[in-house]
Image 1 (cartoon, rainbow, N blue to C red):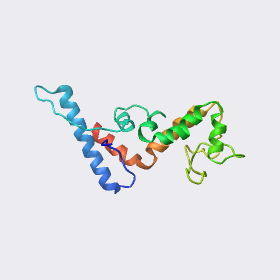
Image 2: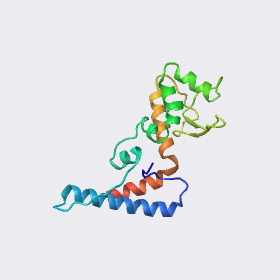
Image 3: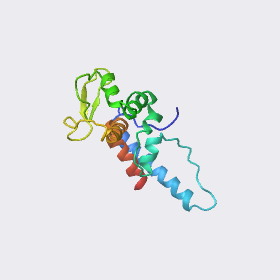
Image 4: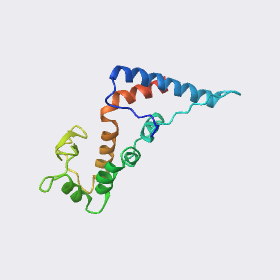
Length: 159
């Protein structure tokens, strides 16, 4: 779609260096635009919404998944928030007799593969904490495999 996304498959050193460089260019253009005189630079850079929010220092919301992966948003986030959502999501993941945990579930096997926080494999999702589960699922999905690359880009913006 032409927006800048950070890929987990790119060589890490290259991505870290390019992330810092792109971040520095974005910061330079923003400063020139904010404080520049008659000739402000044009920077035609389209960022995916979650990345733009991170650069701006905002928290990622669960709805940001919809801009990157509408299907995942529909099948995990919307279901989780609906009436009887936890039960419906458990069924969709094949967890008929198991609790839904604060973990990332493999979309193919339905098995929990990584905890969303340190005690995630022991922490059950309930109606009282489903919003936290949704936020942590969104953050994990959007950032887990690209945390270092994203940090390099943001570091470049703020350096």
